[in-house]
Amino acid sequence: MDISHLNLKPTLRILVTGSAGFIGSNLCEALLKNGNTVIGLDNFATGKKENLIPLQAYDTFNFIEGDIRNLEDCQTACSHVDYVLHQAALGSVPRSINDPITSNDVNVSGFVNMLVAARDAKVKRFMYAASSSTYGDSKNLPKVEAVIGKPLSPYAITKYVNELYADIFSKTYGLETIGLRYFNVFGRKQDPNGAYAAVIPKFVMQLMAYQSPTVNGDGSFSRDFTYIDNVIEMNIRAILATKPEAINTVYNVAYGERTTLNQLLELLKDYLSQYDPKIASVKTIYGPNRQGDVPHSLAAIDKAKNLLGYNPQYNINKGLKEAVHWYWNNLK
Image 1 (tube, rainbow, N blue to C red):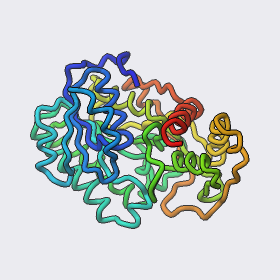
Image 2: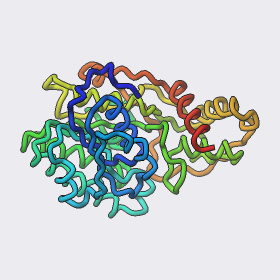
Image 3: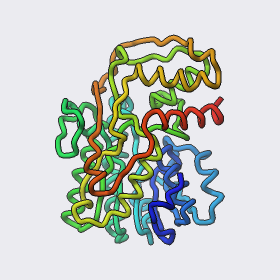
């Protein structure tokens, strides 16, 4: 993604944790193309070394193999950095249900290590990946930042605790923080493999192999699917924020429309069948609802528009076309 229109200074040194992951590697690439010096930190628990290959072509990319659960690694990474984009985490609701201890160690203890390291290094601002899972059992639609429910999984608890810690570090130590509640991010480089693969790349890979995708429930559950370039825009706008009321708070990161799983599959079949007509006839299998899932998710993005000037360019249709094109050319 070209971020030159956002006027981010190319002289900035920016740390991206989770730099070998899906979102982290895309952020790194956009920043490097803009001329920024980028420090990447990853332990490859979920990130992939191949995601670093295009980044290593830049002299301004410095990679540290390290773990956010190790305070010294966090301190090394934060040294002489202007801004932190903290993406490192163990995602996935099912993973957290199966192994709440590791999810907590990474997402909470690791998060506090990063806050401490950023504070001590006098980083200008700390942006972090929050999550729409924080809305929990709240039935309100659309989701507004100030109204949340009770978390429905260990993962959701860890991401809410991140927001609480960030708020305390802002008030107690003066560390500027901005939380970005991601809503079902998808796009290039998203891993289609593994037990905890996100739904879009998983469905794409199954359809390309003429395998019937399995939908949890009857397909009526809906999500505010958010293309990766909208997420990159929000991270940059968070760095650029100048209004006092725009800092030390949280934002929804989404497009502001919801799509059911049935609608999603129809779109995927439509776009993929343009490459291979046989995909259009692949049947869908329906299974039980997944534990910890919320039925519907839709973000209000007025706060981000008003305070950060957020203007997402990719709706589900435009984003899926881009993502399908990438998957077809890179994973077929």
